[in-house]
Image (tube, rainbow, N blue to C red):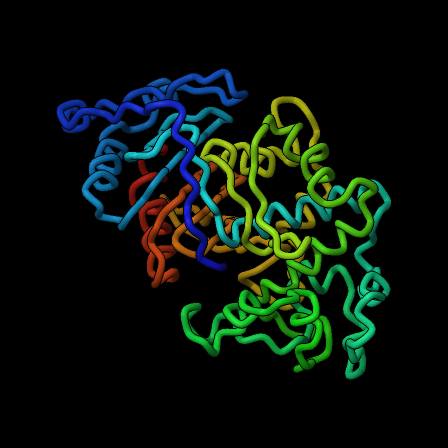
Length: 361
């Protein structure tokens, strides 16, 4: 989850709700932009408005740090949209939320017969003849990359990202990302342990670039972004290698579209973009971890006697897509809360459990 500067493209102006409206419990209906996203009001959904009025005030007061956008959709309709001082058209680098997009692209490549979960990755890196594939490295498969069970020694979460000993920081400073990742020693056998590894996601992007006829970017655009109605996106790269572990920039509503696709078993606005089987695999496959599946995290919240599973894409600084399939509920956030990522995640889960879900019941 590498920190990137935000790219601001100011096209439309977004009006904020007045304090008087918020105190009285009124929240403006999100603006219909004819962008494929249906909008509605809180009252039309039968939800308690006062909880969302308080949420709006808390966001504006900075109670949850520097939140740039906070969107909530239920029943496939956007009913809450906070954008602070940003605009509808502002793109945000979403850090490791990027990984969930990468995972979806792998699913599409597998559907088209370009890849298989059981494929060994070594043949895709024949140009890197300096790599030592001994000690189990030659046994790493596509699935191991997806589930971050490669067995490669990788200390990304042990120390802060700003620390010079953090391997992700070292990766970013290296001249050749692929060589740097593959040269790391093996620690365990592939498939044995979960170890969060942005390098694994970057290797997936490299492989996609190898197998797609027109390359990675064109494959992503035609197979995922175009069907979702995402006409402009930025994907950073270094020396022709795409940063598929954290280099994607999109707009908040485009994050919502991606979340809606997963909430609806791969469909978006009546179009089956992603195979239903891949959504199921993504959310359920967990060979060795209770917290991570396939380029997505997972957790639970409890409300009104019910345990809800949350599948969430999570990026450094407080970037999120959260999906509760039981309720067809999707939330997205973009933030500049770099630092204590675990604190902001737990804070968000508390808001969902104690404020949002009770208002919906």
